[in-house]
Image (tube, rainbow, N blue to C red; front, side, top):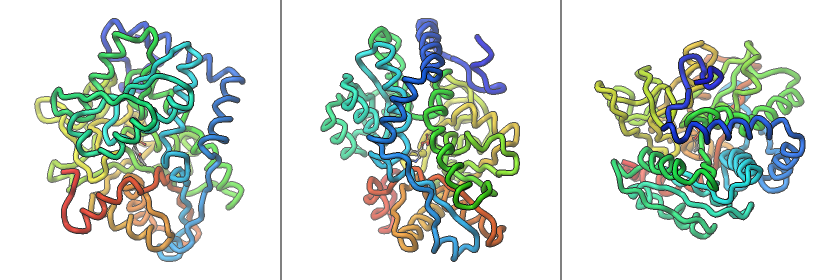
Length: 395
Ligand SMILES: *Cc1c(COP(=O)(O)O)cnc(C)c1O
């Protein structure tokens, strides 16, 4: 196996022999594409004209005043389809077209990546199948309907726990059989190499813009950059351009669910046990026998039992600090952003915000925190309503 597929001891290509060639073709096509000006021009064209970039780096005035430090929000929630996922989907589907593929497949848990992929598939005239666990299909009927409206076929997966982990296994199996004309669009910075790198490069636009914007507004780099972590795509995109700036503190926020000590959480790093899942070696939620555990978070988008391999590496090298925030803490932060700034954030993004509030306590009014507001909260209003009435719909 080639060593560039690794981030320290993490990453790699843990797939069946039949997929090794496919991955190496993909790697070659990707490396050529990102060096090709016409590909980059197309990608940037669709980000501007279709996604609506660049989006603002918004100075949250009332929050900053209340918490006594300057808080800036990178507004990925203002993208077409309401989150950062579309940046990556546009990149991957353009690559699929360049490789001559006519079909795309994707896995989805909460349905957000499924909707983004169905959107890109409609835009670029590709056939689209989305694998989704039966449990998730029942829980996320609105997103299932959106995908169908966009022309995608939603394939019900009934194996195992009938959730994201099983849908991913099914998508990988299908890909192994149909790779000739089919491109597998992965939704986060996870999976076998080159996916973690590809997703990082297609999400890098977040920190490219944010860095330029903060230099324009403040004339200096921020003291801290904060983002929430499910599989780790908005965070790796938000960190990418700051990794070499050692004076900028980088913080990734995982979901602590009901509390790490309860075992009902989605913090892949909390235990610090590496394992292999979905073609990669990384930190995973697992029991004492090494079986992958179901994640729990009130936020469906953070409900993934692993984390991208580069994050595992950035944790071990100490460049990024990883922390976690509970369901309750993130819901308090979510309501505060609604009331103080008139912005309804995704529950995922509210995890990052809750940690920003904690950090602000130790900072002064001249410090600057930049955080990635990864998505809007319209999709979450039912969950918020149920939470406020005292029940958690994702249980
Ligand atoms: C999917 C999602 C996430 C989590 O995924 P990452 O790959 O970790 O970014 C975070 N925020 C929103 C709004 C999402 O839709």
